[in-house]
Length: 219
Image (cartoon, rainbow, N blue to C red; front, side, top):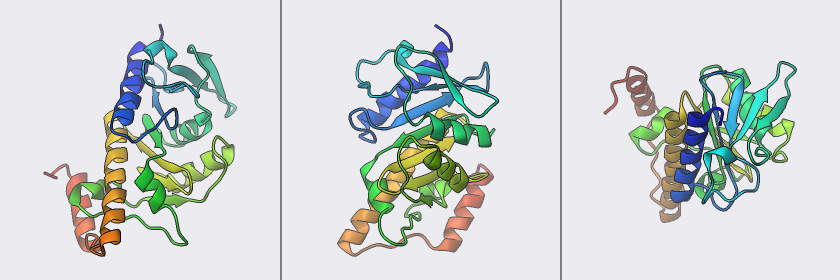
């Protein structure tokens, strides 16, 4: 089996996401660039339950020079969100792993006329600002382009209206951390607003925390 380690990493990540209830059923998808070839991406398959999945079930896709993506290996066809994952990896050479979930609180926080998600606790500062993407049909090139453009050159996370969250990182650990802490940020926001106790971190504190994180001095 080709790209075995990368496929195992993707499989472990999707099963962790299911266990953490970031993903339900067959929704959501995770992808990772292979170290052997930066144009090869391993991604979860379409419509297949993640419980009991094997590494060889993870699909392998090649990002071609003409901008298209070709399924080259795997027992099942790749996720319909291949365009979104690959669009971000094409634009961002620093990104090697991407995570898309339909997590509940992140989805809620993308609703409304002027949605905004800001840090409640210091660890969440690393993943802001969190961009908001307007609803576009899932699996389309339109949503792929909007997610890519919203993340820009350095964004880690964006929320997609009526859809979910998209996170990225230099490796799978970083991408999963972005997913976990953004959902935590969304959950604490929803609960605090419901209780009438919403109090996000001051903007100056967020900037100071981000500077510490950038200098690798955060506790």
